[in-house]
Figure (cartoon, rainbow, N blue to C red):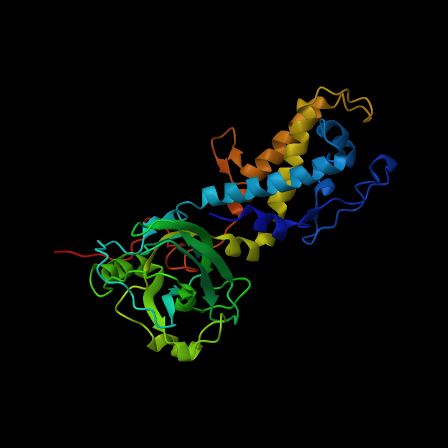
Length: 371
């Protein structure tokens, strides 16, 4: 998976349009290009064609829409060609952390502590984990605040009011909070603290043993992508609602749960890799935009008289479309030989960037055994 908005932001200004002296298109101006690839540098693709390609849109709106849609199509086509190299599947889906019967026999005695879990993401820029929801069982109805801390920040990076309406019945609160190894607004290699302050509670929660099935599930399932363990930080190490004393976090682990459960979703996200290498897609985007415009012109029912001899050149436009489409996607010649296109020649070895999400090439022999 990748985040489309991040790709479009990174690709903004990647491919441009050179300034046209035609006064009818002064509103477009010169659309700058960070890659020095311009759509109207391609023979036969002029700003004049935009009048017939835009359909019911304004020229500027049409150009913006085409740049965005064709950029995403190029990225999608590139990823499709790399599927043998990339593993972009969802790794975990709504897995529940604690998978054990809770008999509600062990109420937690409140003692002004911070209670929660430490979450340490695996070293990877491609694994994105989301805390989907959190489940509490309380001895009575109550409301309190749940906090998510990043060890590179003093204040909580997320907070949410948890409202429990029924006694001794688990109730789930939706969070959708992201945790990652290198958070954009944080720093790489941090741990996260997810939990509550006991002084905010008005009723008891229940604990479970972490040393049995709970710890086993956390290690077996979640341990591939993150470290998770419960902790209890004593009141002398707290600082109001700021993050507790960081020095004490490693020593505050416990063999009892903090009274709540988690549901996680973990995915591979190659957005950062694509953003960091966005320039490599510039020529492909240039041709993709040209192909789109030529195709839209030929599909249009608008009279082409304004462009000099354009009606007579409709066949020329079709040939030009076929030529640029072939250069972009490649094709088979009359003799049966395949000629690679620009997308075929795009190459980036993802296989060694990430041991989890971006695995080695398929069919590569890495181990052999004979018995």
